[in-house]
Picture 1 (cartoon, rainbow, N blue to C red):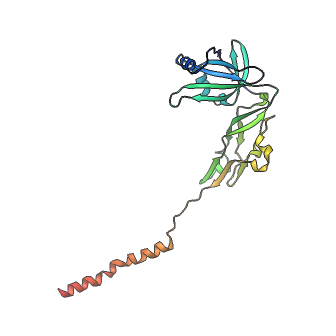
Picture 2 (tube, rainbow, N blue to C red):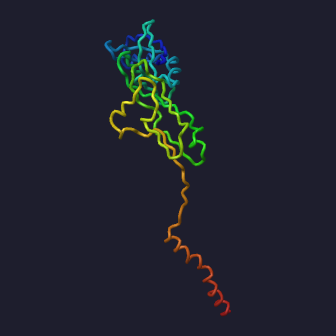
Picture 3 (cartoon, one colour):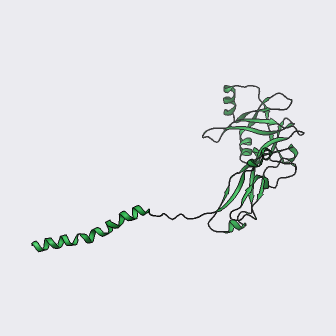
Length: 228
C-alpha cells in the first residue's frame, strides 16, 4: 500500500507576479492544485515546511495529502520551481489523483547488494547505472516510493534490462509495451582494461637516426685535433 504524507496548505486569494512576490516575502510559497473534476485552486504553503519536505526523496514520487482546514486532497507533485541560487522554492504544481485511475509517475531506483555481487568484489570492474529513475504505471494504491534492483548476482559482462526488474504488485513499465527495442539497459558490469600507449612505427624509425647522431660527431672532432 502506498505511503502518503500530509502537507498543510491555505487558500490563496490573490494571483499575479506582484502578489506572489509579496507572498514569498512573508515566508510562503505560491502553488496550484489542478486535475480531476474540480476547478484549479490557488494555494499557499509555509516555505519552511515544504522546503523540508523537498529534501526527501518521497516528496517527488509519493502521493501527498494536501490538507486545507481538514479537507484532504490526494495529489502528486508535477512541477517545482527553485530560485537560481538561493535556497528558496518559488512555485509548485500539484495534480489531483483519482483512486480508480492509473497514474504514470517517475520513481527512483534503489540498487541493492552491489558490493556483495561477484562483479562488485572484483578489481578493475566498472558497474554503471544507466538509469537512476523509472517511469511506472499503476493505481494510486499500488504506487511505490521507489523500486529496488537487486544486484547480488551481477557478474562481469552482465547487463540488467528493464524487463528483468522485479516490480511490486500492480505496477508495470509502460515503455515495455512499445516493443523489445525499448527494453533499455539499466545496469552494466564491464572489465576496465588499461590502455598501453604504443609508439607508431614511423616515429620509432625517425628516432633511430637521432640516437646515432652523437657518435657520428666524434671523427670531426678528431680532425680538428690533427690540424692543431
